[in-house]
Length: 257
Ligand SMILES: [Mg+2]
Image: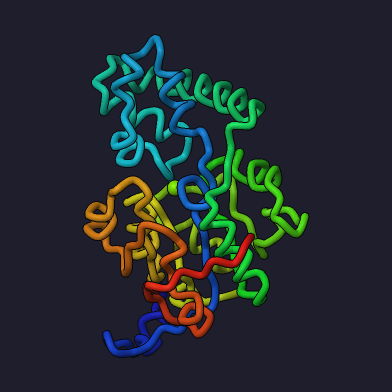
């Protein structure tokens, strides 16, 4: 830290100080898209370990949100594969080939609640960014159409997908990059994530974190520090969010995407 930074007064914030939200940063895989990453990792494990051991829990804990090479190494280590370090690159490459094959087969779907939320925020010109470590995320978002014929990807003002960033989650670099590019202060951004690493990243970036527990993993997301955990984006209080506040809503917004 430079001396000048030391002389700057720290921002005053108490738990009561409102942090009005001005933008939403969406994780892609598991929040917007049911993309076949997990299946690709599992299929590619043949020859390294029993693919059946690559469970959803292992994917969420060790791989989700990480750069491909890091995820490959973490998975092989977690599964006790010998020479994990030396074999991680090949495993990552085999996973990528399998993923491309699955995408070509049309194995990418948008979660309906995500389509509804993004369409509702887009209709009100609420700033949104898509942020993913995956180099395939943007192409997958571009492959999906909304009911009005527009491209799902076009709803986002900013995309930080597949960039060669220095750090992966739980480092906040990807979200801080998205916030900077969308032109909104980090502490005014809401990050929507389905992985614990992503929740931690949002917190380290001084952002508000909403956990989406599609896999019954509410406890893990809470323990990671999520400000709120919901099982569906339909349960997000849209009117509150448009006013800058995060809360759940027992009356889901149901407009068609
Ligand atoms: Mg995710």
